[in-house]
Amino acid sequence: MSRVYNFSAGPAVLPEEVLREAAEEMLDYKGCGMSVMEMSHRSKVYDDIIKEAEKDLRDLMNIPDNYKVLFLQGGASQFFAEVPMNMMKNKKAGYIITGQWAKKAFQEAKIYGEAVELASSADETFSYIPDCSDLPITDDMDYVYICENNTIYGTKFKTLPNTKGKILVSDVSSCFLSEPIDVTKYGVVYGGVQKNVGPAGVVIAIIREDLITDDVLPGTPTMLKWKTQADNDSLYNTPPCYNIYICGKVFKWIKKMGGLQAMKEHNEKKAKILYDYLDESKLFKGTVRKEDRSLMNVPFVTGNEELDAKFVKEAKAAGFENLKGHRTVGGMRASIYNAMPIEGVEKLVEFMKKFEQENA
Ligand SMILES: *Cc1c(COP(=O)(O)O)cnc(C)c1O
Image 1 (cartoon, rainbow, N blue to C red):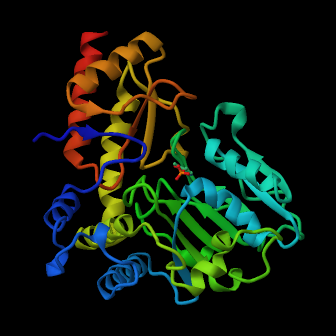
Image 2: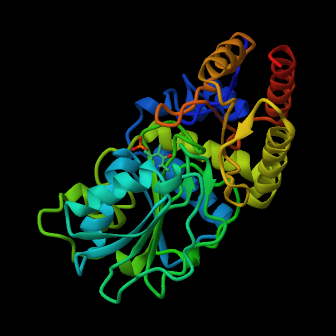
């Protein structure tokens, strides 16, 4: 068996230890004679799995008691609709457009009410985070929406926007559990887990209790009403049982690694290796304004499309997978999520240096 260094933006690398453990438990989970895939979601065994996953997540993120943790389906993309359905009481909300995922959420919200663009970095291909200290937020807005880490463009909000007292909703899909956050600053924090937490098919939403009500937009499906999910502890219908179980294992792995502060230091160390090299290289260049750089997704280019393609091809042959940039940006992108080991980044930089010498 040989595993590659996988720089995929998502679904992405998972901790090897977690995969091994899951493999060991595949046929017989803790002596119950069946796989987690085969058991009832109403069983005691499964109830322990989902409860423990929630408890570990609460510990890791220090989630206050007045926030619910929901394990949902439909991907982050379905949640784009759930936000206005559950939150647009005045049918008006502000969106900060920092990339494609923010834009898609914005467009989805327009189906349900008045979505207002508060700021955008589209003028420079989303290569920076706009100034959000004094946005045109009005009193009648139900919430302010951001995509905190922009997976495609490699930018990250280092300070949260000034929402002028309005509720902040944040898509953290690609920076979930990469560093500590203060949950009390948000009304809703959510993300698809397939970037940094687990296998595709689960969305985790952390929602302040007072935002979970029966007062939703007319026509909201039962399944998409947060109250339905909260009242049933995410077990209204059959949840993605196996995927939640793997998320639970990843939470335990992060705890063992020292929690979110340790994760942050690990991620900063990795990102620094790559950014330092990009800053000194004569061939490769980072595409993002320095102060807005993501710790998770690092886009870079040579400035020559043919050379980019040659790099991606040779890197793949050398065991560095999924380095091709997003189709809308071109170039390369290295996603270096929690589970990417430091050697993966060190070896990638060695390989880039060699490529630079050979193609000078
Ligand atoms: C990947 C991604 C999404 C879309 O996730 P799906 O689960 O495929 O719907 C949304 N937002 C961000 C920030 C992402 O990285």
